Every structure is written in structure tokens, then in C-alpha cells.
Image (tube, rainbow, N blue to C red; front, side, top):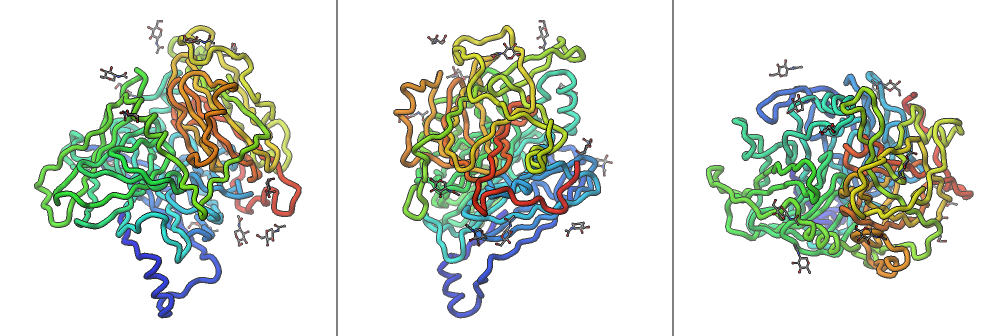
Length: 560
Ligand SMILES: *[C@@H]1O[C@H](CO)[C@@H](O)[C@H](O)[C@H]1NC(C)=O
Ligand SMILES: *[C@@H]1O[C@H](CO)[C@@H](O)[C@H](O)[C@H]1NC(C)=O
Ligand SMILES: *[C@@H]1O[C@H](CO)[C@@H](O)[C@H](O)[C@H]1NC(C)=O
Ligand SMILES: *[C@@H]1O[C@H](CO)[C@@H](O)[C@H](O)[C@H]1NC(C)=O
Ligand SMILES: *[C@@H]1O[C@H](CO)[C@@H](O)[C@H](O)[C@H]1NC(C)=O
Ligand SMILES: *[C@@H]1O[C@H](CO)[C@@H](O)[C@H](O)[C@H]1NC(C)=O
Ligand SMILES: *[C@@H]1O[C@H](CO)[C@@H](O)[C@H](O)[C@H]1NC(C)=O
Ligand SMILES: *[C@@H]1O[C@H](CO)[C@@H](O)[C@H](O)[C@H]1NC(C)=O
Ligand SMILES: *[C@@H]1O[C@H](CO)[C@@H](O)[C@H](O)[C@H]1NC(C)=O
Ligand SMILES: *[C@@H]1O[C@H](CO)[C@@H](O)[C@H](O)[C@H]1NC(C)=O
Ligand SMILES: *[C@@H]1O[C@H](CO)[C@@H](O)[C@H](O)[C@H]1NC(C)=O
Ligand SMILES: *[C@@H]1O[C@H](CO)[C@@H](O)[C@H](O)[C@H]1NC(C)=O
């Protein structure tokens, strides 16, 4: 998880001496991912989990901007599998994006599929994870893109870097837990622990102390590549005694700012610089959920240790001060501080003119389910449509013009407007279901306002769009006001990312240019809500130019 960094100037120096040759062509990086079940012990219980190459978390994909990446995923497990390269734009190449039944059919037991993609115009921390069922609970890892050789970071060069992945752990088999929940029409059991790099830390009541420790040296600067791979929790994170300087989110540089704690939603990544400038000792790093509605409260904390070199393990670390679990104000303040770097080298090309305005409401519902507890099952919807997974991948249906797989009549606005964030609506929670998506013209500019509603209850939702980054031009509490709110947008240096939180009982407006043809999934990154149908897709049409259409599918694309 640790990596010593050689400065780009050292590279340049060694290059001049002829000790390192600069490849004229981008490199090809090959990885083998064997999906296999392995017995892993974490919380005093050994249990078989689905892994990549027997590792948990899985291996880091480490590439340089411009590289071509080939990952041969071979499935030895009893589950169908697909892998998503979260945040990679996959230009014209949805075939390598990974969400099951959206861009590909799954890799079945015994099958192989090589994800073949170029890393173009992106650098920073992203990640990869299973994109089928809840298998990403154990199948995930970091994806680090270094800037091109000779290109320094636009912030002080760190001496060393670490990947920090947050996760959730269930004692029971996750797929069984989910199946049980689905059969009852209820939320599945919550996780039993949170983890940092797969380990809950020494405060978890278990005689085996599975703890991640990060060794630092006084006076050095560290880059932490933080990834929230948890399934259902937005998380706070802090390090006792040390502040953090945020320099990047979702593989886009930000204006640096210093903070005592960060907030990170499932799907998001955040790079921070940490200076080892405190009294050499041992310090806890800790993460705990942010939940600002009285749902099932999850206050489980995961800890890891920042340890100065030479300090013995017997020194008791102190805990950091994390914001309270329900600290909405901290969350709103924190989100407001995130801004694009917007430098000459890294401009924020915010679309100023909008071709297509979309307004999607987020809601919960309850539909009839005779076999479920109380005869109903929970679901979730966008514009009152709960997405039904097709059995043929939508990208295949789009490319080969297969009829009857999906409909393109997803409404641009709610079918029936109401007071979205008024009193909770608990009657008539019935919800329409369907495989309905929106067609988007090539290279048009899109503004999407995501509006939380009080259908059953308000809650915050981290939304992820595949195939694109977007600019977060505005956010607010209550109902979006199309007459007043756009005037308050930040169109200069809004944060650019691939996953954004829609605040509890509020709205978030994003903009992007639809210049990547293909079928792109958009969903809440809380797995619970994705499973309930809080998702849809954009079918971005081909352009007319020579490089403006979806590439032909690879020969080994898994069949349905
Ligand atoms: C996994 O470990 C448990 C506990 O040690 C043991 O009972 C079980 O047989 C093991 N399973 C496999 C597949 O090795
Ligand atoms: C992928 O890996 C599997 C298992 O090692 C192998 O059988 C297969 O030939 C590989 N595919 C490619 C394209 O290399
Ligand atoms: C990746 O780049 C190489 C070299 O330019 C090109 O041949 C290949 O088609 C590209 N692959 C994809 C999936 O775009
Ligand atoms: C869920 O939790 C309940 C109560 O703790 C327990 O009885 C049940 O076995 C759990 N279900 C699953 C599928 O793990
Ligand atoms: C947050 O939770 C604390 C204790 O659980 C409670 O006293 C406080 O009122 C809550 N604050 C908000 C803003 O809900
Ligand atoms: C939020 O920001 C406001 C204004 O900058 C400040 O007064 C307040 O203390 C901050 N609250 C939290 C919880 O950070
Ligand atoms: C089922 O209905 C009963 C009676 O209305 C209610 O008390 C209970 O909470 C409901 N259970 C669930 C899981 O919704
Ligand atoms: C919506 O509901 C809120 C809370 O009940 C209320 O304050 C507001 O006036 C309502 N808005 C409209 C347009 O009815
Ligand atoms: C959602 O659709 C269902 C089924 O068509 C309908 O009964 C319900 O009133 C709709 N709800 C909203 C909020 O539009
Ligand atoms: C998309 O439109 C913009 C603005 O009109 C233009 O600058 C750009 O070249 C277009 N991109 C493509 C791929 O056509
Ligand atoms: C299309 O892409 C190829 C390969 O990347 C490039 O050589 C060619 O110039 C592009 N054509 C146009 C019209 O952009
Ligand atoms: C695995 O995927 C195939 C192809 O989509 C499907 O036919 C099969 O039912 C899936 N198996 C399971 C266990 O879901």
C-alpha cells in the first residue's frame, strides 16, 4: 500500500544520463485478475469471500496517463462477475466500462474477458470494483494514474504515498444477506464492521487485531489516496493531531484547502497531503458514517494507525475528533470548499450554454409483494421510475439495434410535480417500474438537477455517472427554484467529479458535455438504493464524424 515516489526531476535527470529510457509510445500494462473464493479472517471469523487473486482488498492497478491497460478477468467463482473501472471515461469504449446488463453481460463461471482501455486525459486516484449484485463488498481495489513522466503534481511533491480504502464487512455471506432482504422486501442487514484497507482496527472487539498501520518519518510529506469503497455509508475521516490538505477529488485537481476532517461518499476518491510534523508517536486515523436522518443509525468506527518510525507498538494512540454523525453543517461547509483548480494547465471547461435541461426526483416507494413481510417491498426511483435490469446489455441492444430491451422515454421532468421536500408523504407510495433511459444528442450540453424528495423520508444520495466527469454547478436545501437558483451557480471553478452527494432534502445541479457516445449508467452509489432501482442510463448517440461513434465490440465480449 506504500509507494516511495521518485520526483519527476529525478526521472528527467536519470533520463538525461540515459539510465531510464523514455518510451516514445505509451506503455501497455497487463494485469491478470483471477476471481476466486478465498477463506479470509478479519473479525474473529474466517469466512470464504470472493476475491481478486486471493487478495483483499484487491491489487492496485498502477498506470501512467496515456497507457493502454489490458486486464484479463477470469472467473473461477460461482457468481457471475463484471468489473467497473470507476471514473475512467472509456471514450467510445463502453465495452470496457463493466456494469452488468448495462454495457456487458457478466463473465460467467469459467469464462474470461479482457478489459482493454486507454487512460487518456486523466490522472489521479480512481478505483475498480465488481459491478454486479453486492459483490463489490469484497471485490475492489485502487486504480492509480500517475501524470505523464516529467509532469509534476500541481502541489508540493510528496515523499511517499499510501492508498487508504474504506470498506464494509459482513460476518455472513453478503449475497445471502441481500437475498434474504430482497425476499422479505426489507433492507438487508447492515454491515458488521467498517474497515480501512480491509481491516477494522484494534478497537473492534476481537482478539485478533487486524490493523492497518502507516509508518511515517518526521518532516516528510505523504500523499494519501483515499477511496470510499463502502457499500452504503458516506464517511467522515480524520487523523489525530494532523491536518490534511485536500488536493484532488475523483482524479481531478482541486484548489488546495486544509481541513481537520474529510467527508467522502461511496464511489468518491480524495487525495490529501499530510505532513508528519507532530511529536513522533502513534496516532489513530478513524472513519465513521455521516447520517443526518434518523434511519438505522450506524456509528461503527474503523481505525488505523499513523506511526512515526521508531515508536514502539506499546504506545497507546489517541483518537481524532470526528464530526458528529449527524453534522449536516460540517458536510455542507465541506462540500462548499471543493473547487476545481482551474489553472491554465487544468482548466475547468464548464458548459455555459445548456442544450438539454433535465430534472430528476429521487424517491422511495413501496410496491405490492404478496410474498414479502407486510405484503410490500421497498423500492427507489428517479422521476417515479424504478429501473428494472434487462437481460441483454443495453449497450449491445443499442449497438446492434436489438428491439424490446429498453425504452427511450425516460421523462425529462417528474410526471407529477409536488412539494418535493414538504411533509413526509407516506400514502400512495406506489412506483412505476421499467427499463427506461434517455437519448442524448452527441456533443450536446446537459444540465441535470437531482432533487431529493420526502417520499417516505428524505436522505442524502451520492450519484455516480459513468463515462463522464461533470461539474457540480449548484446545490441547495429544499426545492430547487428554476427562477432563482441558476443565478447562484458557480460557472467559473465548480468541482469536477464523477460522484456527487445530493444533500438530505435538497438538490444538486450538474453539467456535462455529452461527447462520449455509448450507454452510460447513472445511479445512486449506495448499493441498497441501486438494488431498489435508483438508477437509469443515458444513451449518448453517435456523432457524424470519423471518431464520434461507439467502437466495435471486442471479440471476447461475454455472451448473454
Ligand atoms: C474456512 O475457515 C473456516 C474456519 O476456519 C473453516 O471452517 C472452513 O472449512 C474454511 N473453508 C474453506 C473453504 O477453506
Ligand atoms: C485470460 O486468462 C485465462 C486464464 O489464465 C487464459 O486461459 C486466457 O487465455 C487469457 N486470455 C487472454 C486473452 O490472454
Ligand atoms: C487505444 O489506443 C491505441 C493506440 O492509439 C489504439 O490502437 C486502440 O484502438 C485504443 N483502444 C481503445 C479501446 O480506444
Ligand atoms: C440479520 O440479523 C438478524 C438479527 O441480528 C439475524 O437474526 C439474521 O440471521 C441476520 N440475517 C442474515 C441473512 O444474516
Ligand atoms: C445530533 O445528534 C445528537 C445526539 O445524538 C443530538 O443531540 C442532536 O440534536 C443532533 N443534531 C441534529 C442537528 O440533529
Ligand atoms: C460552517 O461554516 C460557517 C461559516 O464559515 C462557520 O461559521 C461554521 O462554524 C462552520 N460549521 C462547521 C460545523 O464547520
Ligand atoms: C409491518 O406492519 C406492522 C403493522 O402496520 C408494523 O408495525 C411493522 O413495522 C411493519 N413491518 C415492516 C417491516 O414494515
Ligand atoms: C412545501 O412544504 C414546506 C414544508 O412543509 C413548506 O414550508 C413550503 O411552504 C411548501 N411549499 C409549497 C410551494 O407549498
Ligand atoms: C408513481 O407512479 C405510480 C404508478 O403509476 C402512481 O400510483 C403514483 O402516484 C406515482 N407517484 C408519483 C409521486 O408520481
Ligand atoms: C463539441 O462542441 C464544441 C462546441 O461547439 C466544439 O468546440 C467541439 O469541437 C465539439 N466536439 C466534438 C467532438 O465534436
Ligand atoms: C481519429 O482518431 C485517429 C486515431 O486516434 C486519429 O489519427 C485521427 O486524426 C482522428 N481523426 C479525426 C478526424 O479526428
Ligand atoms: C449469469 O449470467 C447469465 C448471462 O446473463 C445468465 O443467463 C445467468 O442466469 C446468470 N447466472 C446467475 C446465477 O445469475
